[in-house]
Image (cartoon, rainbow over all chains, first blue to last red):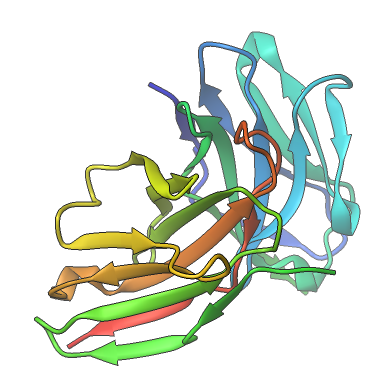
Length: 113
Length: 115
């Protein structure tokens, strides 16, 4: 069965520092992968997605992610974090015949001044 | 830009009462979904809906839950007899592809509180 693992529950970085959030997936075929961000009390905003092609995908707000099939990973990166990036980040993969989204448990990002 | 809307934003109900959560998906989208997120936990799939019938449902989606697209624009989730553990944020999503591929567009969510 498809699954997503986000090994880091909580990460704290300093403003201006680089960021990498880890995501590992389990999926038999070529996965469709997503990163969503959720600010407190808010809905889910899509940061970026990977369907096929270039394994390095660019998203909104300066985020990027790299698909590595050999490592079953889709890590999210940002070169310089801003205080407004503090939020919870969810990695997700499509699964099943109806392409329901299967989410990881999320990584809560805190940004120190 | 078209968006998915959900009403109400917050619903408070007594245990055992029926609630209906409403969603208006993006027009011309074909696949519809409900997800829920219990406070502090991950987002979980409940049900997918296509061509006026349920395509897939999770084990969470038991006989207490039902979905309907009553008028071609609204997409509703009904919980017949709410339990304390139904307290969660409920998200509606829609997808423009008949195949279910592509990006799902999420609504802002309805926070359901069961007392």
